[in-house]
Image (cartoon, rainbow, N blue to C red; front, side, top):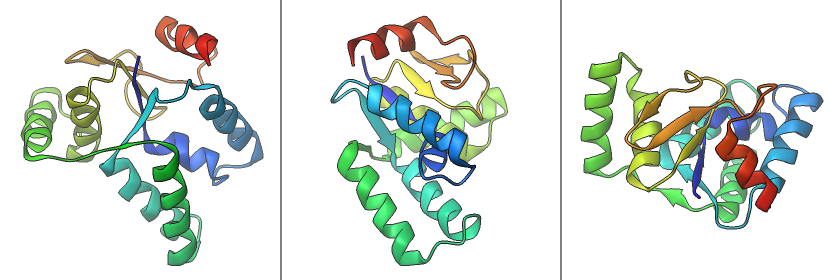
Length: 149
């Protein structure tokens, strides 16, 4: 089963929101079975932005973090098909275009879950379910996946 990671998971893993969230995010990422995770290209761009703007990291340090995550997980391209699907999703479900791009990329690449604390937990679209990996009760698909890791 493939899962897409949203920006907040990577931001937490980078320690931007404190040590407790960093530990939780790193534990989550390290438990994912090899080749199960993927990063929408939008997430990579958002991570860079947050690291520079919110965390105050240098552009070089943010770039290095992006490269590290791209080495760890394959990146899902934002193709014209993804952009059109994202526009439809944003229109039909009143999402921001940026969140819709992440969701559409996850769907296009065959992900079953999108791990996100920011999007609506339980939202389902084109085979992808949004789940909050930091919630007290995890989605059964996520529990199953983590038990394989």
